[in-house]
Image (cartoon, rainbow, N blue to C red; front, side, top):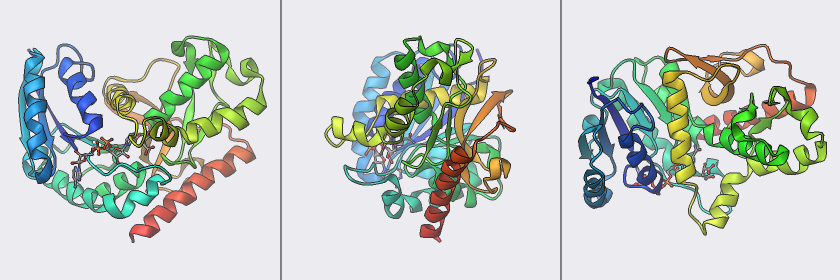
Length: 324
Ligand code: NAD
Ligand code: LMR
């Protein structure tokens, strides 16, 4: 039996985590031979909700679930953690942009960055999900000076999966045949879902789709505004099961590696490539192997797509300015 991996999850009584915890405990994220310890954090006012969650986790009799810790103390939640899934934060309601949450949520990530720095394992892998995810990841990183910036990531995978699904439906192909989609930028309505390099059954997706009006008038706005459309369709509640699934996919690829000939979109610290200045969290195409991600560099970008990528970058700079 392998030694257990410690997974800290914040917002662990919320709606995303109600899907997420059971999938992690079942082995969907780290494999069906990997024991796990769940270190679940939520605020003091939410502690009473843990009772039912823990009862249900126990009632699943998951062979891989070695221990469940519930706490309102970040030091306990992050202590020796190998992985931190930072989900806990307020969701937006209808007619809000995700950046409107900065005032309410930004400070959460100051405290959490500091505590991760103090008590988590130095090689921890951190995924920020709470919105606005890219800027919250940046806040956490700024407060964790002893951790490598490459240990931090923000979630663009839900957007990536949404794009895969829309393309597969459009060309009537299985999702598994759609490759090399990119979601550049911020997890916001300025993100740029880019099909320029995408393949379907190893053919260029753009030629197969052969419908520029669909790309401009339907595909791009659908992906950019999908979060808001889900909130409307779910009468005020934001995506939960699909977000949990994206968390599982993101961590699985980061830890175990991406598929050959393919890449995924991850929010990672920018390095200056594609003229996105270094130091902020931006959605890039990445490949992963041996637990490390690598930005796919050198892709050709046409002038109009370059402008869209810069627009999303500018929005991230505005968000940083709002904090400072
Ligand atoms: P929810 O309201 O159901 O749960 C939020 C949880 O966060 C609650 O349990 C709450 O007690 C907890 N919380 C509140 N203050 C906290 C604090 N200071 N520290 C830690 N936890 C705290 O919300 P949800 O639907 O689970 O969504 C959680 C977040 O994830 C939201 O910000 C949402 O917008 C975001 N989200 C991001 C993506 C993405 O793709 N990046 C996708 C879906 C949702
Ligand atoms: C999503 O993309 O579904 C989430 O970020 C929730 C939201 O506020 O849109």
